[in-house]
Amino acid sequence: MVIRCCGLALILLLAACSALWVRYWSPIYQSSVTVAFATETNDAKASDTFTDNHIYMALTIAHYFDNPATIDELRRRGGTAAFHYDVAHWGNEELPVYGQPYATLQALSSDPKKSIDTLNQALAMLTEKVKSLQTSVGATGKLMIDWEPIGAVMGPQRQSLQRSRATVAIGLIALLASAATISFTRDRSRERPLGEPRTRKRTTTGIRTRQPKPARTGAGSAR
Image 1 (cartoon, one colour):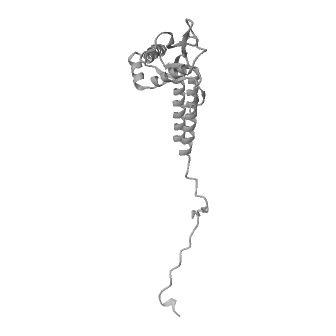
Image 2: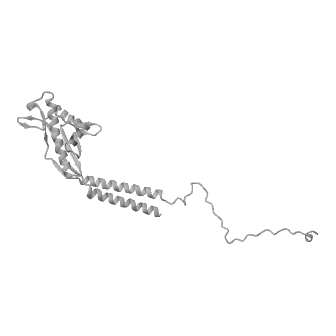
Image 3: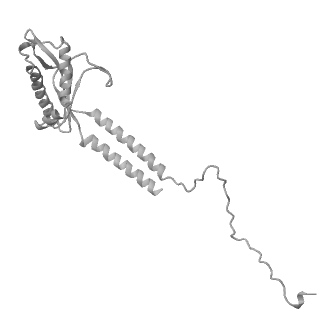
């Protein structure tokens, strides 16, 4: 019983400390922007008119940022936050359907400055890659595809939803650990196998036993 109580107390203490750490000492900051790949039309970019080439450019950039060498280059430039590049699509992750040249760039870090710095460096690399892909095949002028932001850059913003998920996860882990502790520390001395008959022990306390009398010997015993 003492072991069980100590184990449960330790689990609750660790869960409380973990929840406090996630809530107050480990914030996550997000910086993100959604971009559209478009071609200039009448001296203006038209993100609402696009072709398969624009969608292909968005997917090519996705492969570019999925390359470990690209992430290493981003780190060398000072982008140390976690970075994600996702192309907009319908369907699900197993069978995505890409129909528009939109992509979201996102940087996550516990440091707000690292978050926005990583996003800015990724946008600079995006500009360089989009240009180099086209100039390498001889594209020039207004026929070249470029990217433009859809709205303003968001962030760095503190993410409260992730803290809530982490707190719930800590609570579930504490609950499972408590159940396991109770299961392994329960008293098994009173348990008996199924089907085994219950036996009753007879005590001999207070019962006097009669000792056998010795046989008589000598002449008086024979007639």
